[in-house]
Length: 200
Image 1 (cartoon, helix red, strand yellow):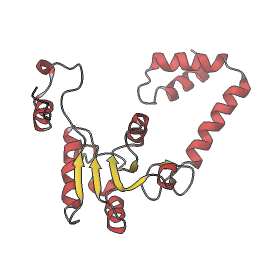
Image 2 (cartoon, rainbow, N blue to C red; image 1 turned 135 degrees about the horizontal axis):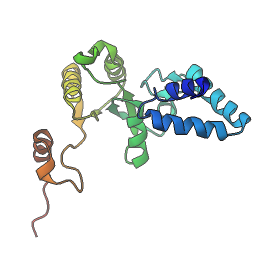
Image 3 (tube, rainbow, N blue to C red; image 1 turned 90 degrees about the horizontal axis):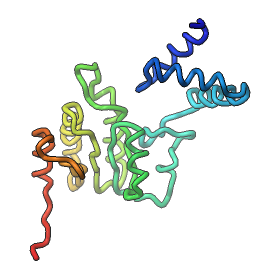
Image 4 (cartoon, rainbow, N blue to C red; image 1 turned 180 degrees about the vertical axis):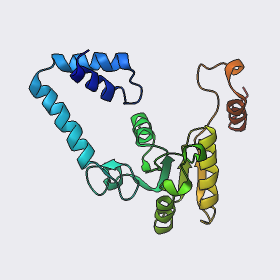
């Protein structure tokens, strides 16, 4: 294999979810592209890496001091949805069901990975709540052990705010899932978050 091709494959395979075979296919695709198209892609990646910022209010990615969501005057500023990563914001926004603000933690507490509460943007969340008229905080954090640890840590930090409503997204068995294959934690959440149906 060409040394140049090997270097490109090695670098591409460092991306999450990209193995060597996929990296090789991507490299060959890049090779078939026009040089100016490849130059535009490389420039866009470089500009993104050097120019992207984090919103000073919610830690979401932004081109400016505030992200588009925080800058939008039509958003409900009394509700904050707390998520782990920027990708979670994108997923929730696609539904069109939430019109409040967000707060991106930047991960979850994970002692095994060396991630402590101080490594996350929890202090920023607390200071935003203290400074604003926040009535509800929705914790939209994954149901992993690390996610549950983070959820309970944040809940304890927010107990100082009297009258603040703290909720979590509903958890349990997904549509189309079979109970037989669900783990105990998932079934427990499903039972705890059961809802009443009409008795006809």
